[in-house]
Image (cartoon, rainbow, N blue to C red; front, side, top):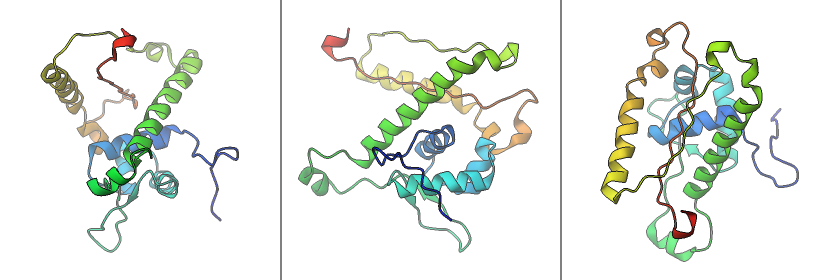
Length: 186
């Protein structure tokens, strides 16, 4: 039996924190299996497999070439050839759809956190959300992004090896969006 998770009115895949996490992982790695995703996210392999298949059904990811007969790796869709893109200027690309879905899932996860944080243990009720406007050059924008990635990279081994996690560690969403503001947004 296959469970259909599409929204009846739109046919869209509803947002879900596991799918958000899986899409995030796939932006950081060329391909991964449900077992690898489970090890990094702390979910079961079956749960990751289910959500990877749902993402694939909706065209947000695709199967990657397998390195052995048993592995079933997944990846983000490969970008279409430039000539194909130029023929379809008004259609959203898979990358655009992925970015929109990922941002929506991030926003939904954050709204869920805000609505339920009073149920978290007292020492977990704060968050470190912040926002600011900076005046940067394109090179500085890239450097700030790289600095954020380097800080986060210090904790990546905790995703792949649970033995590196402190006993009180929990999954924490780290979302950074660096983008130039358009003139009317200032």
